[in-house]
Image (cartoon, rainbow, N blue to C red):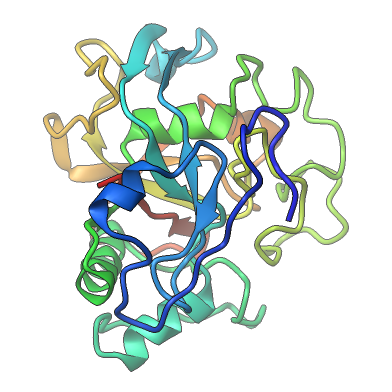
Length: 270
């Protein structure tokens, strides 16, 4: 399966029957940065992101200021790919998710689920937590940016300029525009994550604040502010390159479903 350039061990992919936990809590702690795993045979694939620190935000827009130093003190796991329609449809079939979102006629399967609200995403993580016995959640905004950057401090994880053929956005030079692409259609970043730029905009846990003034510096979710709105990161297929930068951030009402909005999941390492 290969490894990240910095990973100390080859990736491992673990799979068990639905409802089975891949390892005990002690074994979970033994997973190494860069290791990939699943908590059940049909669960989303996770990758272990190493603890570390970075400067979050940018000076490009007021909503991304002030740039502030964030220290993430523990490894955490995050989905390598955005949650797909296949993942979502399993939740609906199992009775864990009540809403079956439309696919805009683009197809379901391995395309990222869209037309889901923050409330819908919370329903999915609750079902996944109950199914696996592990506490899934949406990533915090800080965790998301840290993971999306993959160790970079440039506007895009691959460099200063958007270039062509690196992401699904309105002016990214993708083969087909105006719709989502199957997850994993482009090269992953150094932490092994796909589609952190473009494709579907991704809900994170945090309430909306119009700037980072007063934001947590420990990687936790910022759960004060306007909590009728929640943050979206990464931009979407419908956005131009400026909106898919690693620091770009947006907000929507928590109960609004929009055809460009999706999410990925995370969980702590037990």
